[in-house]
Structure formats: structure tokens, C-alpha cells
Image (tube, rainbow, N blue to C red; front, side, top):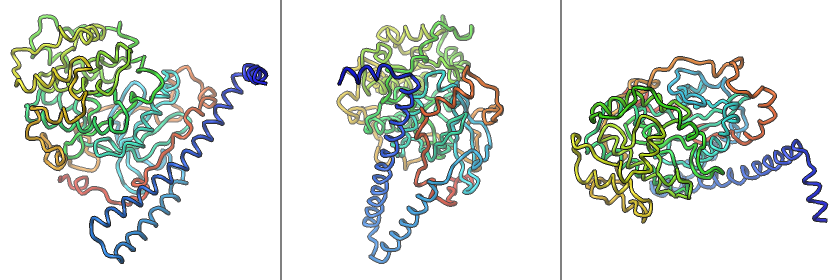
Length: 467
């Protein structure tokens, strides 16, 4: 009997196997969604009861609050059944562009709320084997409901693109800030590194490893506080790491990106001049990747702390410690960090700062954080930091917001035709190919309770420019 089953299974055509897989995924997602929706509703009810008890409300006030909450839950169920699409949003401006798509500032027509819409081309996702990565990002953004993580309100798709609707953080990112400021003081560095420690730890507590911690992925909200973004390389994936990220190491960077016989000032200027090209390319930069990730012999969440050490060095010195003329040379320097991790004498920093960087950038088994995040938080460099209230204090560098759609902290980008149905194909996949493979994007749609039940409520600082 078992032999017959094996023979019938092996004789299945690829088309039949794909249809079976598609049916399995559809059923699993259907029942998984039912369970998660019930759990989320229960959690919202428990949160409401906890808040009411903390506020010391009377029985009548509690009854009114519960009634209002029940109406919101009913409205949420109704709105979840409505189809969300591009026609519900007005595109205002392109604020980011990468190898697989772009980010636009958009406004929801019915509420007036502003979001950052991340648009990813399905054809590119299939061709570059990115499906697992973008699924991971979407799933993590659903689960990671934290002050330290960029909040996703909606996700949906059409026949050409995938869309993630996230909160718009008008402060830009740490890369842009560093390009404006060159270097930061140790006091400012303490603030941003301390907040990033808490942000990374919030991801670790959920059981994820970010694996792509770099200044581009540290966003700044309207008050200048840090939030983590871009979870496409988080764990939970089948591949050890994004292979195409390292595939083109033999592609040299611009010829003026050289570091021989340069002092620190010229190194910083050259790094800044070419940094944006690295951010937008498919090759990227391996500057922030821990050596154990490259070795593929196994690694854990400590690889994120290595990346934070590299960022701390860059904030204080003006460029990362392993930057080189080519990605392969950077890779070589990372792997030989014992010889290449040095501090330029012409850019003096405190011994506390230097010690913490070296505690981050060392062998993984001896790396700070190996025994827990408290080991990092109590390091002498963070003396005077009150972690429980750090988001309540003013940011080290204040952010000026003049309007609801202020994009002054972002680069200028020309418009594109990515939202046009007649846009020319950018891959070898035909429309028929896309349709036949579309099942891999099943269950991509998501609607957050706070997003669908909020009416009006645009933050006052977004209206007036005040904080």
C-alpha cells in the first residue's frame, strides 16, 4: 500500500503538485486567520479592562467604554470585509527607492491619514527569489506591535505589485542624519545607541533576529526617536541569508571610492559621496554584517549587536570601520577584524566609547549581550540613561515638522510609472507567468484594528508643525 502511495505521488505532474500545495496553503491560512482573529479580539478586550481598572472607572463609565469598544469591533469586522486598493489612497510623493520597488507618501482618501506605502513588484520578487523575505517582513510587522518598530496598518496586492502601508515617520533615517551631521557628539551617540539597543531587544524578545541592522533601517519619528524598519532578512526564513546580497562582490564600486593613503576626513567624505549608491543597489554593502553570518556555520541574535557596534563607530568617526574600495575588500576586512578594526588617532573618542565598540565587535561567544541585554544597558558608556523613560525625553537632535506631508528629511526622487498597469515589464516574467504563480502571495492582505477603526485623529503636531 505504501509502495502504491509513493508511486502515485512520484507520478504526479508538477502542475498537480502545485495545485495540491496551493489548496493546502489556502486551507492552512483560512483556519490560522480564524484563530489569530479570535486571539487578537480577546487581547484587545483584556487590554481595555486593564486600562479601565488602572483609570479607576466606575461601573457606569466602564459600561459605556465597553459599549464603544463593541461598536468598534463590529465596525472592524465590517471594514475588514471591504476590499482595499490603490484607489483608496492618493499618492503624494516618492520618498524612497530601492532595487525591488519604492516607497511613496500617500494619503487615505476617507480619513485623511498619511502613510508610507512600500511598493514591491511581484515579478522582481519571483525572479530574485525574494518571496520568502517579503513574506517574513509582512508577518513580522503584523506580530511586532511595539513602540520600537515601524507600525504597519495595511497590506494588500494587485496583479502587478505588493503594498505595505506603514506609519509615516517624518524624521527620515539615521543614514540621512549622519550625512547631514558628519559625526555626532558622544552624548547624542549615547541617546541613539541606547534607543537602538531597546529596539533590537524588542525584536529579540519576539524570537526574531533582524540580521540587517544599519543606519538606513533606523528610522526617526516626528520627535526624533528611533524605530526599526525593513525586516526582510529576519529569521524564520528557509535560506541562511539573502544570497544575492553577496552574489556580486566582484562588481567594483566607482573608481573614486578609494581609501589608500587617506586621512579620516577624506575617508568620511568619500564614504558619504558613495553611500547612497550603495543603499539603492542590489549588491548593498557588507559593512554592517557580522563575520559569523558570512561563515554560514550558524549564528544567533548576537550578530545584531555586532552591527550596532559598527554603527556606533560610524556615528563617532564618520565612516564604518571596514569600508573599502570594493565589497570583496570590505568582506576581507570584516573577516580579519582583529587586524583591521582600528581607531584613527586624529578622531579622538573616549575610552568608554572605544571599549563598548570593541565589546560589540568581537568573537560572538565573548560579545556583550551574550548573557542578556542588561549587560549592554549597564555598560559604563550608558551611565545616566533612564531606559524606562527614554522615549519621553527630548531627542538628542530635534525634528522640525511643518505639515502633515513634510518630507524635508527625505531625498528627492523623480516620479515613476510603477503604479501604472501599462508599465513596461522589468523582468522575464509574462503576465501569464505572474498569474500562475500568484498563489505564493496568498494571505498577504492585512488590516490593523487601529487603522480601520480610527476616524480623524490626525496628530496635532502633523497639523501645526508643533511637537
